[in-house]
Length: 451
Image (tube, rainbow, N blue to C red; front, top):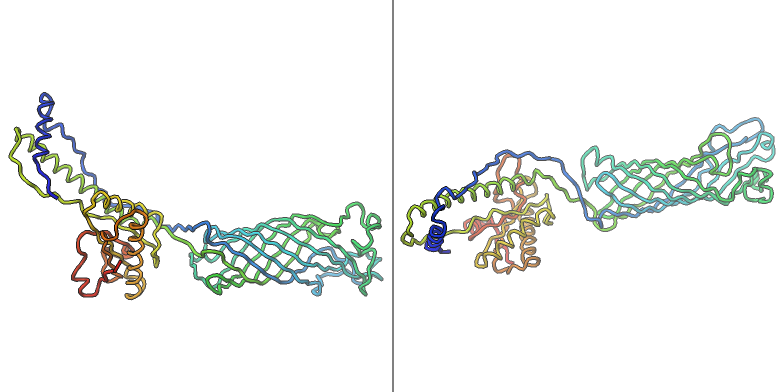
C-alpha cells in the first residue's frame, strides 16, 4: 500500500515546535540488535495422550494351587511336596489404564475354589488323612511396567511384550470344608462342617471368613492381535498371612500360585503423541531472524527520522511504497500425522490475527512431508491432509474466509529445509504470500488443492 511521508514530516514539525528547546536527533533511542546463532535443546522424546485414551479391560481364566500347611499322607510319612492334583480353576477380570508407554495401573479381581491336603496330626493320619477346600475372592491394585518399551524404545506396534507387575489388595476366604480319604466329612479336617465344635478343634482363632491383605507379583506375556485386542498369558503369585486357610502352623506365610490366560480389550484410542523440543529449533531460529530484521528496520527508521529532522522546515513530499513484513510462520507435525499439536495452535492463531489485521491480503497454505520417511505417493497425500487440517482451523475456529486461502501439497518433492540430518524439519505446513511455485505446479511436483 502507499503512504506519504508528508504525515511523518508534519508530525515531526509539530513535535519540533512543541519541544523546540529539547528536540534533537539524539532523542531517538535504538536498542542494539541481538543475534542468537547457537541453540541447545533436550533431545528426549516426551510422550502424552488424551485422558480418554489407553484404557483397557481384561478377562482371563486359568488354574491356581495353594501352598499352605500340609499334614501326613500316611502314618509316619510327612508329605514333602504339593500334590499336583490340587490345581483348581480360577477366573479374573481387570480394568486399568496405561499412564505412559512405560507404566500402567490396574484393578484385578480374582475368584476360584481352593483344594489342599489337610493339615492333619500324626495320629490322625493313620485313618483320617484327606483334603480340604474353600472358596476365595480377591481385589488387588497392581502397578505394571512395560519392560520392552523402557529398555528397547517405545514402539506402539510391538507384537510381543513382557510386563512385570506388583500389587497389594484384599482377600476373602470362606466356605471351609474338610474331607477324609474317601471323601466323607472328617471332624478334624472340617473347618465349617461342625460349627459347634470349632472351639474344640481349632481354638478361638477359628473364623467362618478369613480376611487377609495379600501382596502380589508376577509376569504378563502380551501378544498384540490387533489395534484393540491383545492375548496375554500371566504367571502370578500371591502371599498371605498364615491364617488365610484357617490354620496357623508351620511356615508363617501362605501362598497361592496361578497360571492365567486371557484377552485384553483396549477402550478408546491406543497410542501416544510425542514432543521433542529439538524439533522446534528451526522455528526459534526463524523467529530470532525475524526479530533481528525488525530491529534492523528500526535502525533504518531512526536514520530516516534523523535525516528528516535535519531538513526542517518540512521537505517536499515524496511518495514511497511500503511492503508488509514477510510471513515466516509454520505449523510443525509429528511423523506420519496430520493432527495439530497443542503447542502449534499459537502459530495458527498468530496467522489468523495477521489476516484479520490485513483484510485485503491472501496467503498460500503449503503442506509438506519429509523425504526420509514414506514414499512419494504417500507423502503427497499426507501433506495434503496437513494443509487441509490447518486451513480448517483458520476457517472454522478463527472465522477466516476460505476464499483468502490457496492450498498446495508438496509431498516430499520440495524440501524447504536441507540441514543435513534434520530433514524431519520438513514435516510442516508453511504460510507464504503470492502464487506458490507456478512452475512446480505446472510440472506436477506440487498439487493445488481444491478447498
